[in-house]
Amino acid sequence: MSVKRVERRGKSYWRVQVIRGQTRIRRFLDRKSYLQRDALAIERQILDELEAQEREVQVGQGGRGQSEAEPARNTANGAGPRRGTTTAANPSSAMLSGVGDRHSTPSDLETPQDFARFDVFAERYLALQDPSKSDHRNKVRNIRLHLIPALGALTLKQINRRRIDELRISLRVQDGGPATSRRQKNRKEAPRSARRKGGPRSPKTINNILGTLRAVLNLACDYELLDRAPRIVFEKVAKRDPEFLDFAEADALIAATEPEWRLLVWTAIRTGLRRGELIELRWKDLSLDPEHAGIRVRRAVRQERDGSLTIKEPKGRRARTVPLTPSLANALREAQRDPNELVFPAEAGGHRHFAELYRVVKHAARAANLSKHVHPHMLRHTFASHCYMRRVPPQIVQKWLGHSSVTTTERYAHLRPDTDDELIAVLEGRCAFATG
Image (cartoon, rainbow, N blue to C red; front, side, top):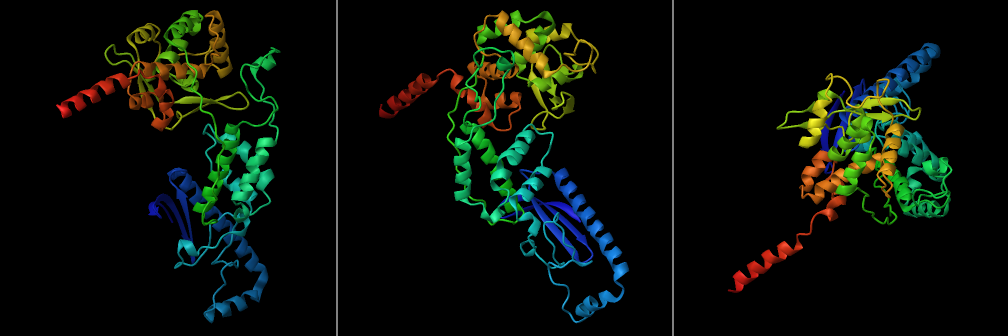
C-alpha cells in the first residue's frame, strides 16, 4: 500500500494503492484539489473498509459449514470468482473506487453502483473537503440546498448540458432567501447596499452554485465515473472595482478611532492583514528592528457558527512577511509586551470577536464623517489600493496580501498612475531614430 505522486493523462495525481491478499484497489486524486494528508486519510479509510468486510466474511463462514465447497471447486477448475461478487478475495464496498485482481489496470476497475447517483456522490465530495477552508460552508449549502434537490435523483451520466442549463434557468427565476443586514436588524429604513431582499438570485450567487457542481463532476471524472464533465456556461457578472479609502480618508479614519483601537486600525490600513490574522497577531510575530521592521503572518482565527474562535493557518496555508512603515513600527515598539501575548487582546484577555471589530470601524467612520460604507475588510482593500497608487509592483503586492494568484491582485491595477504618455514618448523616440 502506498500514496505516490504520478503523472497521468497530462495531469498530476496522488495515487492511493492498497493491496490486500488478491485485492488491489487504486484511486487517483487530483493534486490541485487534495493534499497528501487527504490521500493518506483515504488510504486509511480503504483499509478500514477491507478489514471490516473481512471480519463479516469470517463471521459468515462460521455459519455456512460446507457451503464453501462449491466456490472452492470453481476456483480449482480455474473459473475463479466473477468480478462484482463478494468473496474474501474480492470484497465489494460503496466506499471503494473499484476492485480487481493483482493484474488489473486502473481502467479495468469496476464502477461502484452506489456512486452512480448524484446525491450519493455529492456527499462523498463533501466528505473529502477540508472544513477549515473559508468556502466549505458555501459548498455544503450549494450542494444540499440547490444541487441535490434539483439533480439528486439523477445518475452522474444523466447530468448533461441540457439539465445544467435548466438548473441555471431555474436559479434565475426562483426567489432567493432573505439576505439580512445589520441595517435591517437595527430597523433602519434603507438597506446599506443593493443586496437581495427575497428577490432573484444574483449572477454571482448562481455562478457559485454552478462552480460547486463543476467541482463535483470533475471529481467524478477523476474517479473514472464519467468520461468527461459536461460543459457548464456561467452567468455574466459585471465586475466592480473594490471600494477603498483614499489617503486623506484613511488618515481621518485613523485619527477618529478610539485610542484603544487606533493601533489596530492603523495596522490594518498599513499592512492589509485579514481580520482573523489581526486578531491572532502576537508580539513574537513582529520584527521591530528599525531597519527591517515587519510582520510574519503565520496564523489566523476563524469564527465558527456558535461564535467560538478557532486558530488555524492563514488563508492559502502559506506564511508571509509584510513590511511595516517606520511610524507604525515606532508606535508598535512603544506598546510592545510579552512575546507570546496577543498584540490586540480583548479587555478580559483572549481574542476579540469579529463583530466587535466591525462596530469599532463603523463608529470611527461615522466620527470621521465618511460617507462610504466602511468595514474591516475595506481596510485591506485600502492597503492594496495605496500600494498600486504608489507604484508598488503587482508581484510585491500579491506577496504582501497573500494572494495565490496575481490575477486577484490585478483588481486594483486601474489605480496605477497612467504611464501611457511616457510609453508613447519612448515609442516616438524610437520611430524618429529609425527614420533618421
